Image 1: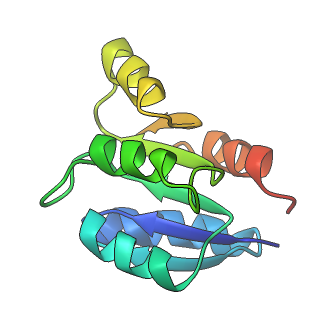
Image 2 (image 1 turned 60 degrees about the vertical axis):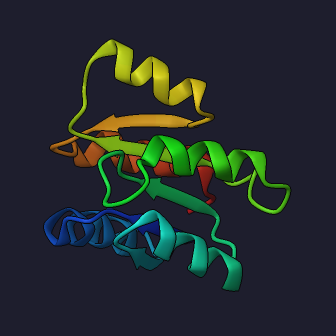
Image 3 (image 1 turned 180 degrees about the horizontal axis):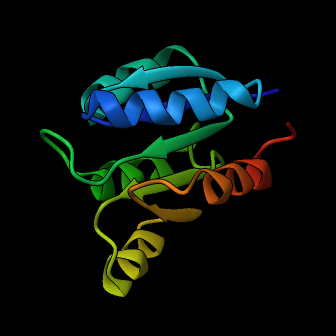
Length: 121
């Protein structure tokens, strides 16, 4: 069992991702913006981060890059999760330090397999 921080401004997407995580026994904390996520990361460090790209304020790309630059968060696997599905988006996500990139709508089997890569569930 592990912990996940889900950062997505869509309540529907947050619910879907949270339910998949909980079905695997993963405890979930959520945030609706990068700023809120950074506040939550100051309190506790999750085992994995699921990060949307299109967020209010700073983009998921920016948040990913910042987290990978910080000593206390650079080892956390980040799964970018977005409707932005072009090869360039995926390439750019990996360049920002993302460990995986999943497109929305989320394929539950693909998402579950990706989570299991990073967690011992």
